[in-house]
Length: 146
Length: 146
Image (cartoon, each protein chain N blue to C red):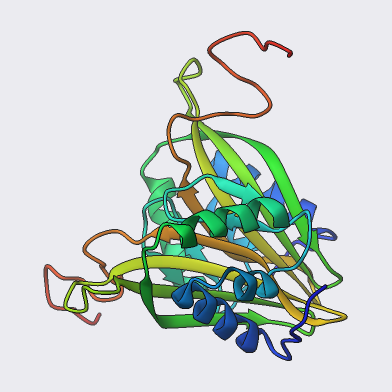
């Protein structure tokens, strides 16, 4: 049984990253839909499918003791009445290395509305190419308008 | 203006991979929602945002002359009335290298229903970890049931 009702996909997303940073398994799994069809892909990782597999994996990650700080940027959202698709960049630093260059992860989060509020059904994260090149801002030559 | 009405997300997905394999830019862009908020992430690539940027990128890819054959597997779908979230594996071989081991790409495709049928709003593809394990058809050894 879910204890928390997320009234918006943004609430669910905030709870996801809060749980991630605090390494709080119960809070993390409150965000996920308790469904066979949920998917979770970590950067460079194989796809995990189903609530139980996703839960086990987060348990392992949090047990490792590594603590992350995540700053979100570049959010692009496509949303409807019942679903919300969030594309964003996670800028991640290990806690204890505050001066380090953030690793940038390109992430898709999808939320669906249920009778008990919004839940995550998919998290797909993959490494951004290094260095992060914005295609609209070429590095080699100044932009020529034509 | 879109010419094709995809009546189901599966129709849109079939058209996406058909266009990808035939390197047909117009057919590919029929599948995409003509929206500022669409996102496309290729394996190892930076996020592309907006219909025009996505179009330009597919044009470049198709111009390269490389032709792919894509076999889909392990589909997991979460769908509602207005959206459909597809997680799957793309098993990709270069055309002309039919004996090669497929590269496996973990992919999220999201479709939204519009007045003119279903359109893709997000494609997020990332490399699966190696060694590649295909659940439905191991290539190296005959399947042993146990």
